[in-house]
Amino acid sequence: MTFDSPMLYLCTGVFGVLTLATATERVLFRRSKGEASPMLQNLKERIDSWWIMAMFLTAAFLVGRIGMVVLFAIASFLALREFMTLMRTRRGDHWALFAAFFVVLPAQYALIGVDWYGLYSIFIPVYAFLLLPIVAVLRADTQAFTRRVAELQWGLMTCVFCVSHLPALMSLDIPGFEGRNERLVAFLIIVVQGSDVLQYVWGKLFGRTKVAPTVSPSKTVEGLAGGLASATLLGAALWELTPFSPLQAGAMAFVAALMGFLGGLVMSSIKRDRGVKDWGEIIRGHGGMLDRLDSIVFGAPIFFHLTRYWFTV
Amino acid sequence: MTKVLRKIASSAVLATAHVVTGVRGVWAGCAPSSEQRIYFANHTSHGDFVLIWTALPKAHRANTRPVAGADYWTKSALRRFFVGDVFNAVLIDRNAPSESRGNVLAPLIEALNEGHSLIFFPEGTRNTGEEPLLPFKTGLCHLARAAPHVPLVPVWIDNIGRVIPKGEALPVPLLCHVTFGAPLALQDGENRDAFLARARDALLALRSRDGGDE
Image: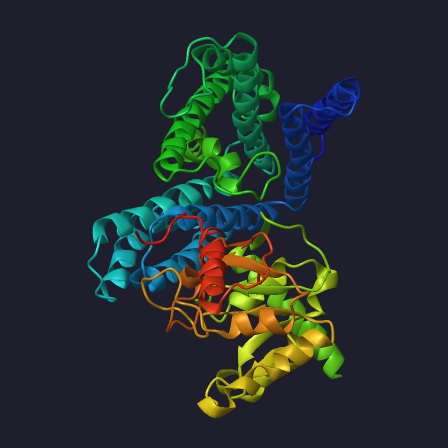
């Protein structure tokens, strides 16, 4: 990765924000005099986990394309493991599950590693979606067959296919942007995760009207509007990282943040359907890997294809 | 040499357990501790004692011995290595003729007298049916009588039957929890069946329902 001024500003910015967050949290803790509320405790855990995630991402960025492919392959594995744990698999799904984890997932990331766009963009929705029901049907268990097939397919779609579009950004050929593609990954992650945090903050400050009370009771119209608007501004402010103009960067950020919100709602209703609050507990304070990835899942392929369509040769 | 091999093998088992099941100990009824205990758990898979062992505090692992059926675990050199050298299991002869039944548990009681903790499966065999938990064999009650000072901790293992269903050689990655309940002991004047029923209920009460077939 080229370490020139925008990238330097970015690293300073990200770690500066984290330092500020940690400092604020320490002050609040000191004021609470050992009687920290559960919310403050959770805030502390969330910030600590952000440090760890930021360090993992930075390490992957420094390694480059391979680092990114490996990091998101691991994230996909952890997410798919959480997803399938909550689904109602039967003994007859064993081979299909095994193939999903140990054939489809590594193959998808290998295709991204070797930059075979023609295959990685259809590998899961065409080949895996057709082959896995075939593997399942060999076990001759027809009980709830459609539901079981659909659950595995949707797990692969969200946890593997969509997530793999983050490292896939590394392979886009954008004139005048050669060797700087990791900035697109950083841009997307910062905008979408920033939008999550900003929606939370706006919601806490001004939230009155619930936007989807049955699906996600904590989300409010005020939080959504404030979060989307500020994520759009954040994206526009980061335009120098991208091949976009400030206006285009803002529009891209808006689309990514909106997809993030809607994707988060979809993943929330899956959790509600299965009667859980969090997907897992691997990231302290946040829940599971999918609880952190859910908003990026829907944004990643859309962002990828918009960029590919409008900005590549 | 064996010591190095043993160390490598046990690290490999721990790493595999974490990658495949992300196993997490949930200490619902007692705190992790290195005091002597008898952990009794539901049994659906050969992975069961590995999960309990992984969920225990590191310092407590070396001193905690799983109880395993000699008929299965002495069949090959590899099985003997894992069960004997890596896990230091106490083997019992499940096929002993009924007149020598009383002696079947003797190695367990000896291990308890030496201060070891035990991982014990009171169903006596792997449960591969639809029932969540088989009726208990009498072994747990014998142990409770022979070592009244050792707390009996119920341990519910989630999902491992989905990770490696019966007859499958390869595991699929799904999250597993190991839930430790509140210790119980045989009470004065409590008869065998009442005690076994109470212990079984205590174990069933730890069961959570996420995923799996309904």
